Amino acid sequence: MTVRGPSAWTSLLETARGCFGAPSFGIFQTLLAGWVLAPGRRTITAMVAAADPEARRAHDAYHRFIRVGRWSTQGLWRSLVCVLVARFAAEGTVTLDLDDTVYKKTGHKVCGQASSETRSDLRPRRSPTPGGSTWLSSP
Image (tube, rainbow, N blue to C red; front, side, top):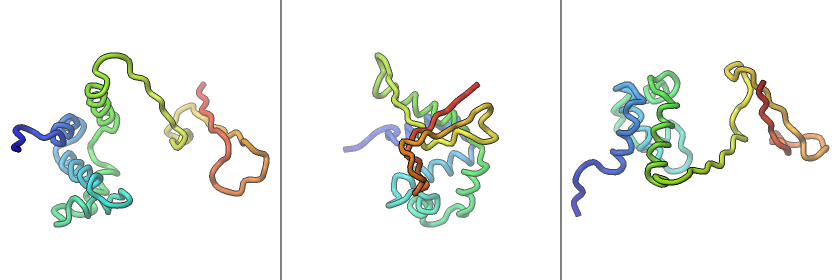
């Protein structure tokens, strides 16, 4: 069977093209292909080894892209959400159930935010994982 036109993979990637500069988009395509193809943990090194075994780009270019590349995380998520909503909930209501328990909620980049932990038990902490809930407060 012959498939004509762009594949679903190419179409999905093309929706995100506007979130990247020209060189950054090529690096993003390679990393995303590596994320799909890499066995085990999806580290940058594993993704590069899976998607670019001939080393067409310098290995540090991929790390530099993540660190200081010209791309928009917010724009990337927006384009992904638009594709997902159009595909799975084109009509009706979209109900979201979000969990931010692993998201960092304090620090110098989070203006006016603070967090506190509630302990579900009163025993001394024996592991680095808290046993209670984390609450986010905002003025």
